[in-house]
Length: 408
Image (cartoon, rainbow, N blue to C red; front, side, top):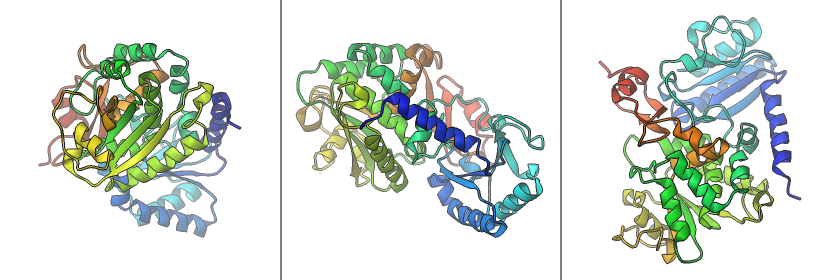
């Protein structure tokens, strides 16, 4: 028997509150690709070994990337009734030391801490949000990144997840499209075309069935925004696609992601299964009468398949080759049917827009470019990682403020 959203939300809130108010020590480990590459799995093993040695029962949560890739591996430790203290550049030896000294000797080693999240004081350690790389950011699509277990749908629901879908499924499709227009959201894949207008064209197109696609191919050198989003908070993309499918009149969606992004695909597969189990994908979603199915299609890594018509050819089982336009995908796309394609970040923004409002989202950014944008800071810069800032921020503030400046 399907549960109502209120029942799902109430149970999720209980799960989340039990974690936050646990009588056991809380430990979270960043296990996005950046954390794993920096040795986070060895750090987890060392933490578990030390906890067993000290006979301490703790709650260990594997989270995604909070964006501070330059100081991975990142671990947070929280004692009951105290905020979580975050530590970076950890080795197995440092992690074991922190577990013993913090949990048994009440020594949080402030000199090693990056900051804390939560109410209360721990040896005068400042808020992590005052870290120079995080300060000045506006986190909308990154609102849950590094804070929730991306493989636990209840963490997402407890923090407002799927409330936007509940709201949207009570609206008329035309009202949804108008709200997207009001938000000023433009495509985050690079072209910057009005998302609301794009949806409107597809809704009005003649033909059935209609399809929606999430372009998660992302093959640009040094770019890892979409991968990190899927690894850290995949449910927001699924939620955005449910809203988009309902607005356009599509009952089938696809996420196209290159197979080499194994971490992102694994998280997305787990998230999709949980969404199905919770009645959020499939028949009669949330009692709305709307049916929507979603599938993951893996690409072989051809750079050209980041282009939407080549991507569709790949989904169809053909060679990934771009074709001339018109006709545009909104008129003749996947298997010759009306199709809407947006990238990962665009879909993630939709969930936030309907959690709040289009007017709320339009309050960020500039007159012509509303909202925020994620960027991957990579290369010869002091603080590398994933950031989210309001559109319109000067590049100088990004490189020398958030990024700390150029090396040497």
